Length: 244
Image 1 (spheres, helix red, strand yellow):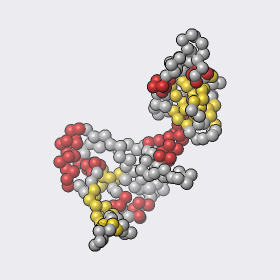
Image 2: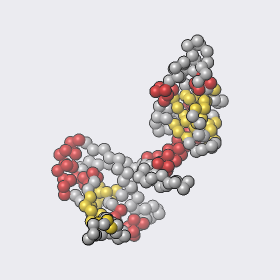
Image 3: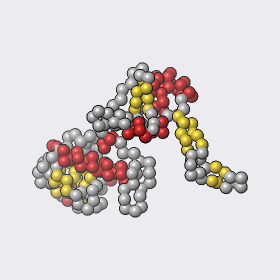
Image 4: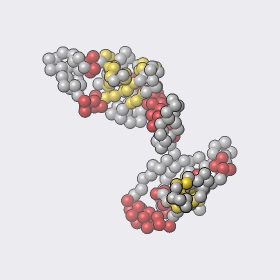
């Protein structure tokens, strides 16, 4: 977590505070040490070269680990308790050296979806896995759409995505989806999203070289009620809502 120590910003590792400190709350009921570090850092090159690199050799964290070892017969033994000490250093150890530092607080649900565990095989969603990260993306995009005035109806799955060509942070959606009903699994996309797989007959315009409606998905796309420039087509099992 991010904390102040000696008037300087530090990152305190979970192994460096006890359970009582980790659970300590302030007068409003919030955790005292609640500013988690998600390792999204911006440094100036001058600071890294002139200040950070020369100082890294003197900063270590102690991590007590279960380290496999060889017995007298050469067999690998996996300990059940901590049996070794690992010296670690991190890029954020240079924070106390900075003279001008700012911490930006953000919402976890829309800014931090770590992937460090394997997907589950029993039908559940493993924490911090590709499954949990996808669910967070789906929930975020659904929130964008509903905030823009759309109704998202859950169909065969909860898949709900908005491509960056359409919106990066939920902006500009209301002019396209307000008052519309979208059915998941759904993808709100732009024609640019399909540039790498263009129809040979119409080039993804929906109109072939004869001036007729193409037989591809783009040619059969139908206007979505309530929107002036949103069309619906079914592609690879997903409801694609195409912004013209």
